[in-house]
Length: 228
Image (cartoon, rainbow, N blue to C red; front, side, top):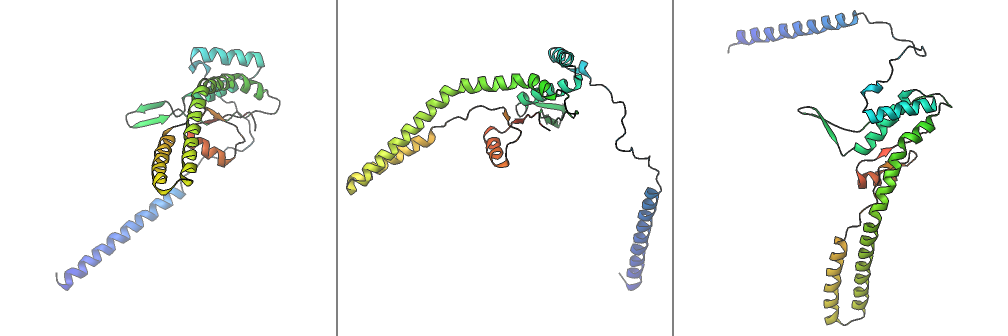
């Protein structure tokens, strides 16, 4: 390529760059001239659509309607807390495929915003009582297996301690044999798994450190709280 060709190529690239820059400026100016609707002022009340109670399963819908009538509260509150209870039982255990390639967990993040003295605590207690009852039942069912595993692990660890104490008082020949036995006993003790007590929920005022430990153990927990 001679000098004239190089100059021609450089000029062509410069013209393309200028044209692209001009198009970008034109797009920016068009965006600035675009009209936007006036923002909605904060603090103004407007009529919101009612909660689609009919979309709930019949058994949950009946409970929501009955509780709303009994407590004289909007069905939105009982329905929202009912969805929170269902999410607690299904979260981390059930997945939904919206369409191929789009999968979501059953976790929900819900807030009931109501004025003071709106009977939020009463509705919360009624809708979440089954969750806490099931949590207690699961803990009671798992208790014998937990105690059995804990006892077996403590017994195996005590045997390791006894072998090590005996090895310290023995001569070199017996010590090697006792250390080998203690090593085998330690491996057996480490293989004994003590299952954690089943949990579905954590308290609303839990601090980050114990929450991290609980999530590492149980993987998915719900934070249910009637507090603001």
